[in-house]
Image 1: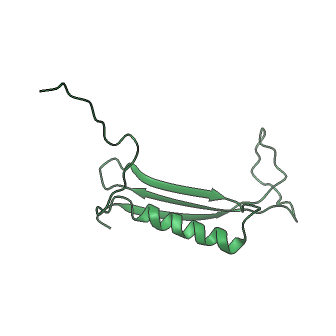
Image 2: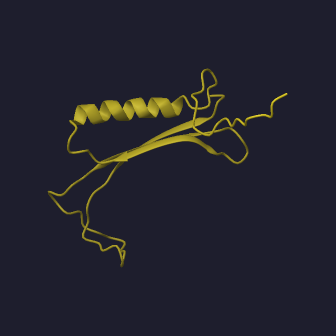
Amino acid sequence: DPSGTFVQLRLGLAQTTCRKRAPQRHCRVLENRRKPTCLACYKFDTSDVPKVLDKYHNCGPSHHLAVKEIRQRDEAECRAVEEAGKGGDTPYLPGMFAFSRGLPA
């Protein structure tokens, strides 16, 4: 894509027996615990030192939304990230333009 590189990651997390303060190499996964799935989408420009044009990340389900709704929302957000930097109609963002009041002529 000439507007940049789009990356989409899906990660499955699992709760383990390891402690945060003293990490170990081999940790046992706890059964019947939460196993959230994380989705992350990033769009980088094509410069020598790539900059993030847009990003989206969501880990785990929201309890008030159904799984299908979460998946649809995630897909829509990632499509918006993928479209970042592709010219066309760029949305107005607060602070993008500044205006000053001139003196009367």
